[in-house]
Length: 270
Image (cartoon, rainbow, N blue to C red; front, side, top):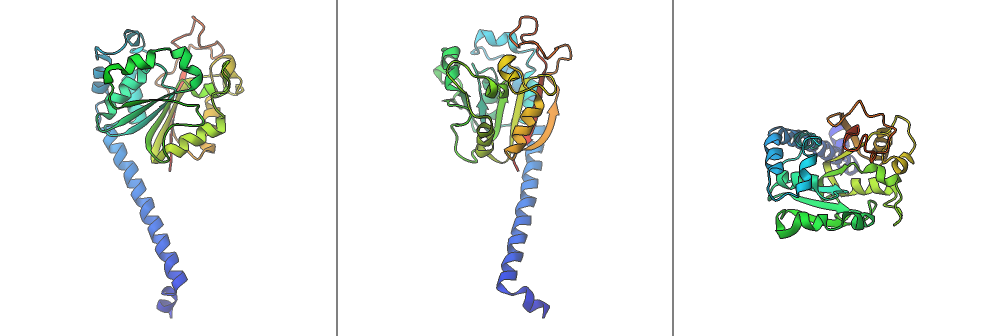
């Protein structure tokens, strides 16, 4: 009687579906564990040292090497050879250099900037990439809510010193709707992929308009928006923290520029 019940068509399909789901879940957990092991085996100090020693880098990069802690950044982002990286708001490409070297010939990096920043950046991106010296890097221009990448195509999305820009409105207009921008990050990430956000810290409870006024953001806003887009919070790091920063000064103020307190948040797409 029990055997006949289990072999009923509806019951059998349900059991098969449940078994398949459990199997996929187990495989997903194994993949995440394997990725962590691979990341742990990467010599980030060596990669960072090689990147900053590259004679082809623009001279102005040198001033930022020490304070940006490249080895710590690469380790936190879990960079490793072969990854597909989408770098939101890459600016002139200081981090792009590190990412390009870390993912190697089999990896790729999309160096994205919004249209509203093109005039500000001038020829910095072109100079960074001239002569095909970063052959695995592709430049991209788009708003933050319309990222130039297919669905489920990216292993890592980074946004360094940038989430506050969602609340900044330059003369050219909005750089992207906040909710849609985080939804885009979730859209392009592969299952198990990571999103790492780094930005200038605002005071706890500071409103969104702080992004426009001070170019800072409360990390709680970033966390809330990422989680609302379906990304799971993994960890927070203080490798760029500065307890001397009052958090109430515009980031371009000479008294604090280049030495702001910055938070780093990591999320995973299940």
